[in-house]
Image (cartoon, each protein chain N blue to C red):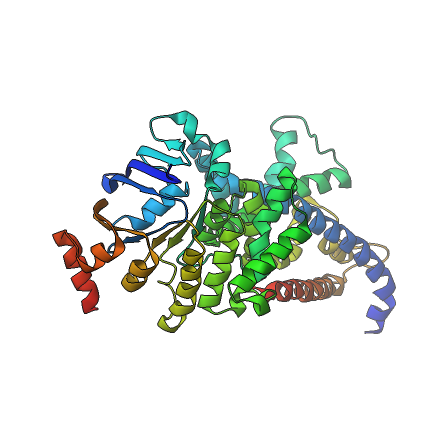
Length: 255
Length: 228
């Protein structure tokens, strides 16, 4: 059974159709890259998965359980959305770290709040895990730094640790390197690559074509709110079947 | 000069009593208006549009008319129009009426500052909290609130310093604050009459108190400087 199954997702903002009949599935331990030009609906798709936007049609199932069905209001209750969100982690383009907390506090805050509510790990255990995650990101010496004292690449790695701290089933990246200076993208991509090697289930929206090809088990090319092409990364990037994919990739290699 | 020195002890004593009333009105206004302003700001941002428009209408009226008129209306309206002066005729009644007028007036100003502060916190902060499974109230108290406070401290400092001086408006309904106390020596009080210097001297009280507030609020601003 696939860990994630997305079926016929539709989303429109007013009269503008942003997502049109989006269907795909993802296996546990696999990475999916989504490529496409700005405005193709990639970000909106991630936002739908994380319940930041509500699709107008379609279903989302995690581990075989339907967690969202546009036709069934029972799956959309405000109270349950919170728990459902925890299936997914999201790393934002602009990091969105909490400026008033240190790197470590950013990583542990949500987990501590959840543990306080439901019972569970002690503050100390959560902190230990937070430190371990920061170490994994190569940021052991930055645990007590505030976001504004960190470079963009470091901030994004803290954001990745923060998302991992919630143990999501599927970790989503929304153009994780687009807001970074070119010399800082490498350190973030390396970390994501390592997560892929460790078989973290991921969906990565990115403009880094070579990275998308190397890290993913599956690639989706979106244009105008539809999935134009979907398949093996090497095939899609190196031998695209569709004319639109070819044009997009050609435009990309020009830049 | 000699005469002033002679009058000094009596005048200072009287001004101190007046200033105590000024301080009381100042603190009561803050204690009432700071939370009430938050409620009003939530109203003005409500997704329920009738509430939102009603709140914004009230804020517009309160900010668009002089506080002095509001004081007069709140103090005299019950007695003159409803024929039931529920404030009573004593100093206590005048103080309560002043407090009501000041709290309401300042809460409206504060609400607009809060609104700016809340809306000034990037939406991504809230979304980051949501994605991490935090509840709305956790996001407000643990994420947004401090960032909002940081943003509103400078404009709030301005309002708070204005409030110190605005308390003198309560003189219009004869609240015995410091201006009233100083003015009394003009008409004649405790054997002193025709003396205008006590009235001028009240400015020293305002100046010193605002000096202290400026330092304290400046420190608060500095304290919140640890994050950007």
